[in-house]
Length: 236
Image (tube, rainbow, N blue to C red; front, side):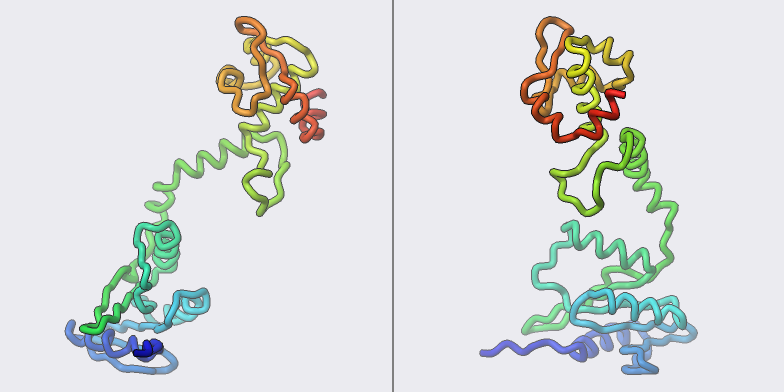
């Protein structure tokens, strides 16, 4: 049996019944609004689409000019994973726009309406507070870089992080001065991660020749050639 393709209008009936059960009057296609729902002085507007899109969100935010209670409604995705990063990010955007989200499930037996998000004011201080650690991490990363050596949109392999730059700084000093101890490197300004960088030797650039003394490995000498600007910067 051929599967019937859903239309936006298929969302109307289950949403209509849902709000009527809650005592609202429901009307379709009112002044370019897909659904208008009213009870006493409360006006709710619902925009219907088969998929979430930027156009749908723009349309819904325009409806906020006439009502603070605006929902977007779509069919519930077949492979709906509420824990996926993409879905959580999408929900964050909808909340940020102070919109509501309705999902409609279609099964052979019934059509089910779920209110996933209510159109409530977005509390930015709470949101910012939760992301405080990320803000601090971004600022710390910026402060750890001597300049901007990355092109926005580059792949992760090309990114010059503060950690990598710190490794290049240490490697540059070892190449220039020969054998050095962590204490000597610290005095040159390599920072509190110096000992950890030398011990972990993440890039394989350092060799401990005796207790507390390090030199640059052959791999380190070769890899440093990829960063001429930074090497020159730390030599000066």
